Length: 142
Image 1: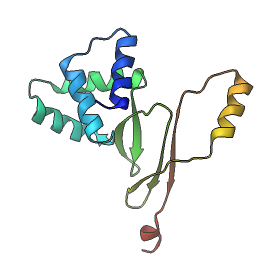
Image 2: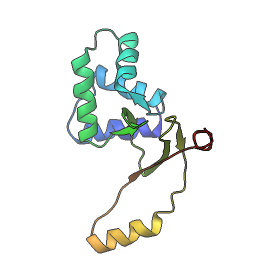
Image 3: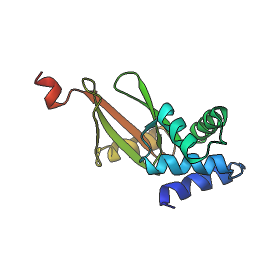
Image 4: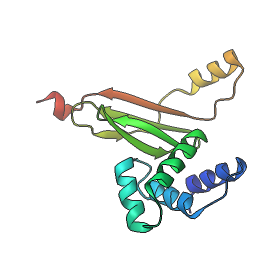
């Protein structure tokens, strides 16, 4: 179990939800795919792992995890929704609008802006997801 999975499990517990087999299976699959997975792929992997988990359970679990901030839907390639486990602090992507390539990067340089927003609006920002869209060098060269 990784730190990310542990945080997800704790978030379920803190919200008063039981750690059911389907929830743990879905968390494990999301973690194994580094959190970037389509609903169709998640359904396929759940069916392989545990055929007793129904389609409705998968979607109810995804909805619950989105509501609790455990999972975040992102649009990649313009139309395809991927689900990812939210890290504790931040996550950054550049998505190529030509080929759908996903480039992850670490330092977004938003530290000063986040501190300013916290003071300005009297909030504590716990994390963020930054997604930028553009064309990679290969697509620009076409």
